Image 1 (cartoon, one colour):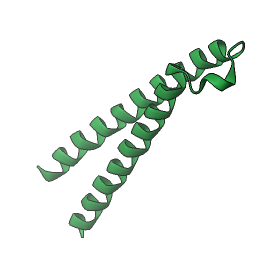
Image 2 (image 1 turned 90 degrees about the vertical axis):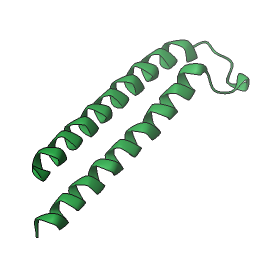
Image 3 (image 1 turned 120 degrees about the vertical axis):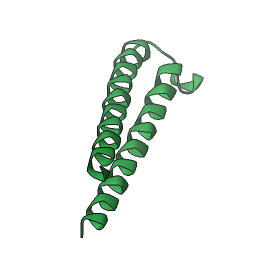
Length: 77
């Protein structure tokens, strides 16, 4: 039963990692197109901010997945 719970949690975290990664890549592609003719003194664009936010979200989900795997391994012994 515990293994099934850990498996569901890990799968959920993996889905969140992929979601954050894809949204970050889409934001990167949009910001690249917008930034070709954009004045850099205007500061970061909305897509650049979204790209950064998604990168931080991906790191958070990956860290949580590592913690869950560590807990599962600790409980297995």
